[in-house]
Image (cartoon, rainbow, N blue to C red; front, top):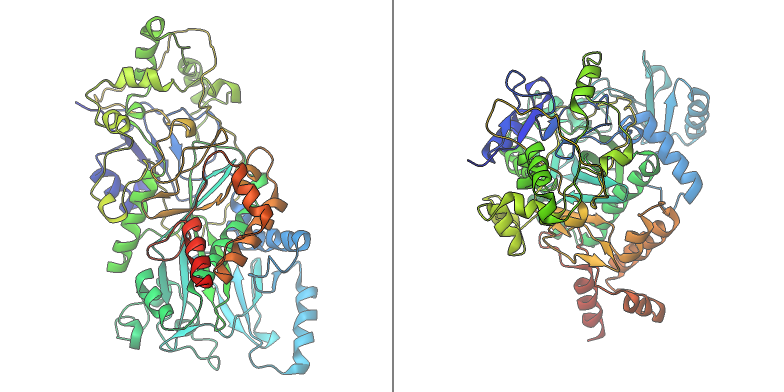
Length: 587
């Protein structure tokens, strides 16, 4: 019987993750039957206390040290630093913000500066730095109404939002960071459009149902179930309805989507250099974006663990596919199901395969240390030790045998399709992310964890990893160099490229050879910003760069690197999009 992948949830939640994984044939971790290490995915809402000593088959749903954009005051500081370093022309997507009480004097000076104009649209919004779901948020014009008893940010209120039938809305953008080293970013095609449930009115700043779009607030409003013009009952749309709305506005829709994509990349660049390398981690962020009446997007906040609660049919449509695609993004394979058994089998046939033997950690030794560590069961080992875990592809094929469906599918050029793939097409296999809150503001502990794709020579030794009493066993990590890419080239001048699309996730970074190169080793932010500006100009004009230098750069590449434009319902590769637009302009 084929072994199952095993997931472990903190506090038994979220339910959606459990349902999706069980439907896919996973089993839930049971501490009474399994060892502490007997799991493939550990999912929790908050940051993990430890990121060291993960085994090759294990993954976590958070990267370390991402609070720098998920806590409101830290996000303000990091964006302010990037704006001072690289200019306000790029980092112009965050409203003027002050952190109180520390910056009260600076806020007061700005407040008084606006007073002579007597501009009634000069409103402010106050938000606690570490609360979620709209708790503690209020709007004010008069300074006497600013009352707070905890650290807060005070932000210039975007008083001219784009409205639909008179109702304010924002966009919840789901962003998956597959890796920070190199930076690899995917944005999901499905977006939640979240509405306020009463008509927008600046004369009533105390009406949270008119100014806040948090579902946790609006579902308790008096007009939540009432039809509201184009919005209809409830307070959520899928992205397809919003696209239909945009098509009637006479705007460059692609340009709007590209500006939002730029916003995501620029925000992540603020923390990417400080996030330790953790190839066993993946993170799903929730970017909250407001579009104003001039169709300019504004970043409101970034959620560490976006809500996965199913409160309406729109949630089911968006979030269930989102989690399934996130599972695919983690690249689990049949080897991961075998875990230590794969290594023991490989060790026994090492002479025949003529390959080095990957070693597992000294489990007995770390079990002794684990007794004194209540929060986390793993021993801290060196980076080099984990570069010995992954067996070569040939060894895994021998271990899996011809009966393995995954192995047979890979031999034919790709993984087998699941039912969810019928919607988005083929994709890679990977793991999910978890959450039941909209913002978690926690300081995360650092950790580093690297599993190399190649296996260096190591000493042979007997694994002491104990087997579970359950007959279903688990896996081993499918590293980047062995990954089956579903869409897009496999190699570019010797470098491996992340798949262009995995289910509904579209790779938005890196998007060309220059950004791929700039994101490896030392992050070259200047090159990345230059390439972003070039791409944005091409999207705005509908033309690609036809200069002699650009053609020479393309000719220098050994293999073709292409990307998709995120946002449109059927995104075309960038090369085809701009080539077709250029030809159309010449006719």
